Length: 443
Image (cartoon, rainbow, N blue to C red; front, side):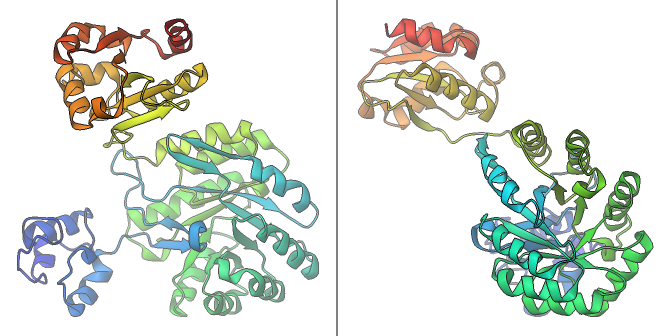
């Protein structure tokens, strides 16, 4: 049962030291109760208070870490069912399934998917190694998959094969996905010994629940729930019911991240797998396993994921500053646009495509688009002039030509007054015209 702010306040040190970032201990307690802050933000909370409050204030869904080093990922930790209620916390991870027959062909294809979109690297984070009944072949496949430099999922229910594979890759903290109602004791002992997360499945939702409860009784709460591969309908129903039970009904035995194996649900049908991956990205797949990943699948999937797992209350921004493009030096033209990430990447991409060296000046425009920032007073002649002064642009760049967005051409006169000595040039109204414009300007 969730605690109220006053319950938490009674156990705070009541020093109002502000070290947690809030003005008072009461404000801190209220934010903890709302889920906006965690208890560890208070450096003076006693161990007894932390122990007393820890379980009650913990998220209804546990956060599970898989992988190690730069390949470590956090799953779960969600507090809401819908993105419009509050930000989702841990994005879905995509895995590609390999086996002994296909590993040599698939691994090079996985490596091809690697690009950046709005400051986020898009690539296949996980490789799922499937056990096909041959222990030696499985171990050899695990060795090959390890070389792909991805966090692994060991999709195996055979205890001996799982043990042999873990001996090779346990340092990388893979997911051991293979526990069910018949082998959970042995698999749990193996996972605990190796320090890895254990995937739990079952014939149906009741069997999964009973197995999770039994594993918790054994002291293992480092779990991921496999929603099963009986049918698409059953997998979707399980994923939704598990998440609703955890977040809406407060049933912590279902408060674990989930794994969806689409490679088995729609084997051989890439189009259906892409559609299902979209579905389970939105409806609660913490790990989504596909048969393959190519650019035709990756571009819509990663774009969807990025949209779902960003904070709708915070604009996607780039840092204000001077961005030299195409090897721009102190003599290169200056251009400016807003700090809204999508606008920045479109404009900078067009400038790159032109091949003309340009110093792109990005001021703090609140993360809005050009017209919105102008209408909100975030993009004005005075704000641009202030930015140029504060960033020391005139000391760093000799050029006194500044290209402004065509949609705010109205600022040209004010800018010429605010920046004496500068030549203000109005760019086209749309980014698509930037390449031709720059080439003609510098011809």
